[in-house]
Amino acid sequence: MIHHVLGLFTHPDQEWKEIRGEEESISHMYFTHILILAAIPVISAYIGTTQVGWIVGNGDPVKLTEASALQLTVMTYIAMLIGIAAMGAFIHWMARTYDATPTIAQCIVFAAYNATPLFIGGLAALYPNLWLAMLVGTAAICYTVYLLYVGIPTFMNIPEEEGFLYASSILAIGLVLLVAMIAMSVVMWGVGVGPVYTS
Image (cartoon, rainbow, N blue to C red; front, side, top):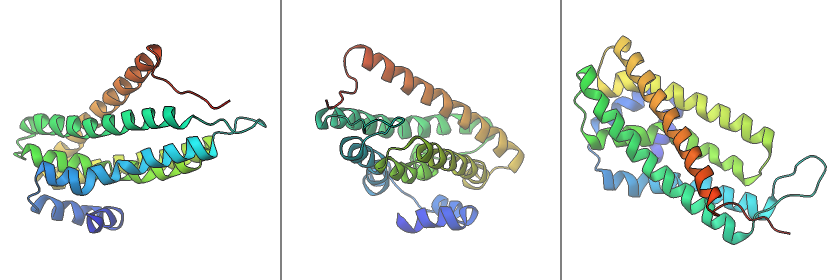
């Protein structure tokens, strides 16, 4: 797992070829990669929101109660695990359009490795600061999009022109999925599952 993560940051095109050549099951991918890396942002957010807190203006830090932070981070963790599977299923479904023949396991593996910069960028949540979050979040999103556009033609073994369209479709669905998760958060807050601040 770690050598692929490092490879995606140092030589992504070559690393995608190596990842494609491996036969990895969905359960193995979840237990050795997704469950571990998806824990980085949620653990960081838990620590950041309960121990450090957000500073707004010149006021005191705003912190969450431990129970509230735990509830929110567990729900976020579950949403990320489901999100990776949903993206993998979509990538698999779209593959037919471009005459690619990956297995569902390969597509989930692709989705998981592609999300790696977002998982690692979650370390910024240890110190909840608006500008830091924006800077690191933007960098993580940009590199994730870069990996997507570089990886799809290589991983799916399709021409670059088709890969561009395929990657653009995946990106669009990813944005729709993100908006759906935000909408679900608003609904959850409306029924009382929202942040509770320390007094």
